[in-house]
Length: 180
Image (cartoon, rainbow, N blue to C red; front, side):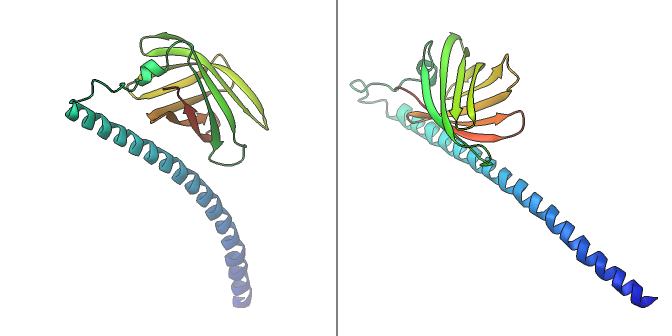
């Protein structure tokens, strides 16, 4: 009887361990995806911090700035008719990288409406968007389409560094170029 008990416990350990390793593998993939997202958020926060440091330094120095052209604000850069070309790369690598263009069609204060066009080897997506500009940050979402997604971004130098998240939870980093 104990012989069969030992064999049964052996099978349980052998097959139960394999199943646990499979669960661990999925957990590792999920954690890696989460780490990539957190690293992107950290880079955005660092960029925001650097922008704030530059703004503070500019406010403190106020001397001798009359001859220099003042950099335009994000609100000025995203006026009616602004076209922002760029690229994107999905963080989970199941979807290929591609090109993106955001066009601002109309503005009403901080609010804007426009179009989001993306293209990669899987196909094209052209959807209407609405969003908001707040200091050096902006965000928008897809409207009037089944392809729901949101984009949040921050102005960093000559470009907007963005995070794209669709309704399936897939995430991509996006960089949009501004015309300063």
